[in-house]
Length: 397
Ligand code: FEO
Image (cartoon, rainbow, N blue to C red; front, side, top):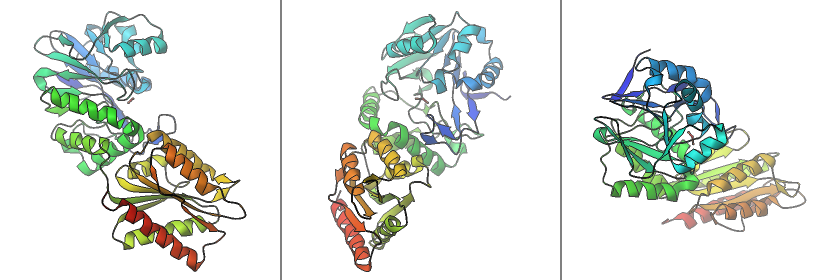
């Protein structure tokens, strides 16, 4: 097993999960796998920053043992207690119960409620430091990026930021660095990660980035806990995060629909074609056949979100209802949104969609568009007019 030294005396000792296809239960499709990154800092004192998901503990321990005896680790630093990072920590603490567990106050509470072990905790706050020898570790609390317990660690002498979930991507690769992997792919996966996990936390993240900028700390490298390490171009991911947290969008419309017998699909296609004909970017998805997490990733930089569903039992079709419930939680504020769909003898879907879109914080373009049974030629013209109305609404936004 070859050692991966990311800075002098700092080693990547994580695990690559090539096979994971669903993350956070079944909320996020990870078709490119993921990594659980853990970092070992070897100085006069030895610190281990974060663990891995529990089932990968052996790979983690093997990598650590290539470099040091795990019983010699002085500090087990837990930046975040979620089980994909802290799941292996109890195993390390069994091997080395003398290690001090360094974490935020909320992380201590959370670890006690997960594992019920009275480890030797040392709670740290923003700007607390630990001198390891030549290297100094500084801590920056980062609540809600992604849980209340989250914090970043920073190695001052290497200008190396270890921000756990922030700036990560679900991407399993044989290479550990951004300059060794297709950058388009990394940004795509980082965007998908942001959209599905961090989007509702945008304002907190933006504030944290601005706080770190105000601290004027130098950042040569960002080593997150998922995906590749930003070695060559850490500015690129910071710029992307600034764009996403500020809700920067482009002239793009995402159309997501669920159709029972094809009428709502006809409406969706007519709307999409008109948007394309007008020179805008459009992406259309049938919700039951595309993974929710991919559709949401496309919505991140879209100015408008159009949601279509046939009426079913006076409401929304079930796949779309589930999709909208997830979308609501992501709070895609500032996006123009509108509803459309077909019905038979009773309406209901469009009204219900409008309600959810309002709860999601969208600027809802009401009343939406409804068609009885199968769209006529005239109805198709109404779809095109609907598309034009939406484009007029987003012009200049
Ligand atoms: Fe990668 Fe919030 O855990």
